Length: 288
Ligand code: AMP
Ligand code: MG
Image 1 (tube, protein in one colour):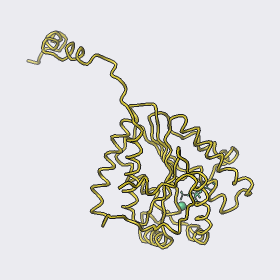
Image 2 (cartoon, rainbow, N blue to C red; image 1 turned 45 degrees about the vertical axis):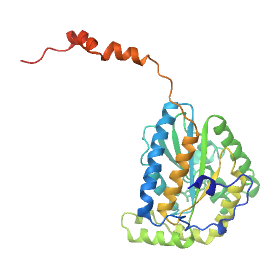
Image 3 (cartoon, rainbow, N blue to C red; image 1 turned 135 degrees about the vertical axis):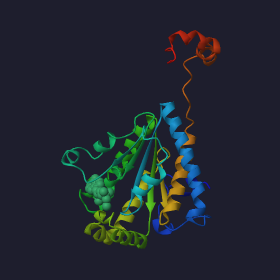
Image 4 (spheres, rainbow, N blue to C red; image 1 turned 60 degrees about the horizontal axis):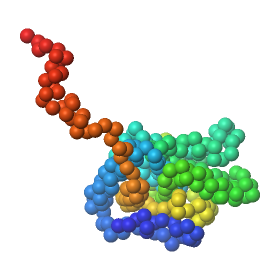
């Protein structure tokens, strides 16, 4: 499938999340049937990440945004599994610390951006400053409304410097969210994740949707596109995101650096029988 094309928010296009089915699963019938395809994409991603690291001139920033229980952690765990930890990191954006809050809102986002050759995943991101901040009126409208342009400028700086920026909104339904909260209640290993606020925030669902729609309309650009990923089915979410990431990485036309030596010469010098013979004097004598 071409999910890159299907789920991208075209620059300047209106976003109507109500019109996008969160339970969409395309032609795929089930988790089991999709598993080999996900595996294929994940392997392509791993190979492409190796190329990114070797190429050493480009980098990738993946932004994950969703309402609570939307599946951001699941994407980090299931989609990025095959990537080499050397060259990949995750940055989580919580409520700003006193130090972060004392700076401009992009300060804390700039520092963890990927260096050349690296992949960085933002689990939440600078977008919280036009989402939760807007919904809860943590700053006046005059302040948050200017942030869309600032975000576009920020992402332009990154892309001009060789970073590919891909942004995913994991689209779930309110019913699916409640079902996932219920699963947490039943699972002693995940009960610690539950807070009363998870439930009270549900009242603000329409406000969040509006804030997400505006954010994606105003900041989906050719150089840093948004993708709306139907995410009620976790396996479909993983399938779509892994495909989009693999395609995007392969599109970057990454190149291995040129070899620094004459391979034939090195073979002749160190790996022929004659060369091994010549080295014998240096190997320790066999034990009697
Ligand atoms: P979690 O992702 O469940 O660990 O929660 C992190 C919390 O931090 C979420 O409730 C976010 O909405 C909140 N958060 C992240 N960034 C900001 C921000 N810039 N201002 C206020 N709250 C934020
Ligand atoms: Mg939470």
